[in-house]
Amino acid sequence: MKDKVTIHTLRKFKTEGRKIGMVTAYDATFARILDDAGVDVLLVGDSLGMVVQGHDSTLPVTMDQMVYHCRAVTRGARRAHVVGDLPFMSYQAGVEEAVRNAGRLVAEGGVGSVKLEGGREFLDVVRALGRASIPVMGHLGLTPQSVHKLGGYTVQGRSDEAAERILADALLLQDAGIYALVLEAVPLELARQVSERLEIPTIGIGAGVHCDGQVLVCYDLLGMNPEFKPKFVKRYADLHGGITGAVQAFLEEVRSGAFPDAAHSFSAPVQPRPVRLVPAAAKDGAQEEQGERLGPVYGVPV
Image (tube, rainbow, N blue to C red; front, side, top):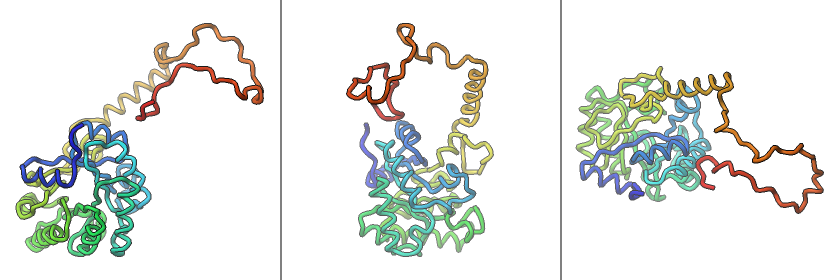
């Protein structure tokens, strides 16, 4: 296994000019696959509200749900740095609540850092989390938890005033102690300016090539939702088609009787005698018959 990626590793990547690859993950199996592929950062995003739970926004996601998914992802990840989103209203109400909830993601969820959305209005939260030894990743531009305030999922920072505010917020967040910054749905010229001004890495999603890294939702880059076609998403596979085809083949074989065949069935070495029911009391102390082992529990060695 290669060296574990930490917040210091990511800072080093920026200094060396090495691009950072970040992908979302929501369970142990995907985390293991993405980690094996060499992903640097796994984001347990509150985007799970949309891609896992089927909501039309991230707003319904709860702290308990984030802790659950963070715990699953950290079980599957070995090399990648894991960051967990602080969901809506887990940090907006005050510093004390923010520290308590971020602490849950670290202590119970096992993540290496947390991510929160917003700029100057949350500098006190960022500083407090730093005092609590909890690393923070920032998030500016299109911030999904503010979808109602923004008037929808629209590109941010197109006017001079809006661009200046994003740049100013980025510098303020850096001074407050964030170790990296996500820039979502902003013009590539603005993302370039922010990336050049900051000493910490920037990670873009719909922000152009000049960021220090890129992030995509795993289901999007794998082509699992053909109806979702935003401009910033590039599909690197067609798993929707692959999975649909595999399931259809399974159903066809089940219905025709081709599955399961002999190779996928168990048999006794001799013709079994009729089963005789034994009272439970008679079984006490009897040694269980050793039979064929079915294999490991899914994802866990025997």
